Image (cartoon, rainbow, N blue to C red):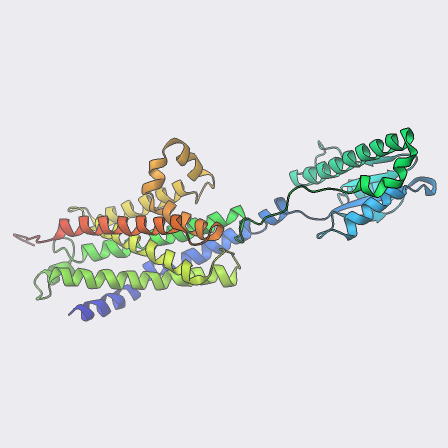
Length: 387
């Protein structure tokens, strides 16, 4: 009887076109929109790019020290700091006005730097940052040049030690803290999957309502069937989790292999997290579906609003919302399943498998157990005088 109910429920769920849309198509559509909206933000605003500059020599003037410095920054670093274009000053000004270069180095008796005004109408934050880098480099060069010139003027013997004077000494060694994806926009994809996991609550609600004779005709028939209600609920609960998990695995594979979203770990751990989210979502829906004689539409509205509210607090609509909640009411983050799911992805990405990750999984399964136990207490041994 268990397997009969199990297979029957899978067939019923596969016929629910609305549920399949929310589980399969909606995460794919929203994930695609997120990709086009956020996909290049980190690359254009956070990652360093080679800065185009123009170099002008007045009357054939040359400054060997400055030229060698530019050459080193262009050829000996990866990626190169500067992309140098040597041209006349008139052409360089035109390139600067068209934002094709970020600054102009004029080599004459002295080296000077010319940048566009930060208050220019077409000046955005990225250009301003690149110009700040140019100004910091130029100030550092001028300070070093002045110091070396004064030292040589006071003691010409220092000229023989020029290579040692200009050598940059590092007193620390670089250490890579993580191999994960540090793009902060990936959190929206974490919360997208968390929202899809909470939407599995619809399946749980229908399981509960289809086992109550006063809420559905199917529930009335099941109440007079020889199959025990515990067996029927267990079979439907298991089939609901399996079906919803398989449906959610498709958007996850789409995000990873089609859109190329880097979660920092392989699919097995992603699937484990999604499975925990599905169990919690179905259990939560089952709990809501068992509440009293509330109409089906009302229960669906409760599930939609509560799921979206949890995702809002987790940062789906406003990326920094989770930090705001953590500051003013951290307990909400503790009991919010969307936060637990998204934090599991974040932990896997940045820190790998550790105690924090298993703590999130434990919290999700604990929530599921509480919701399931509470739902079973509400519908166990329920009798009806009239249907």
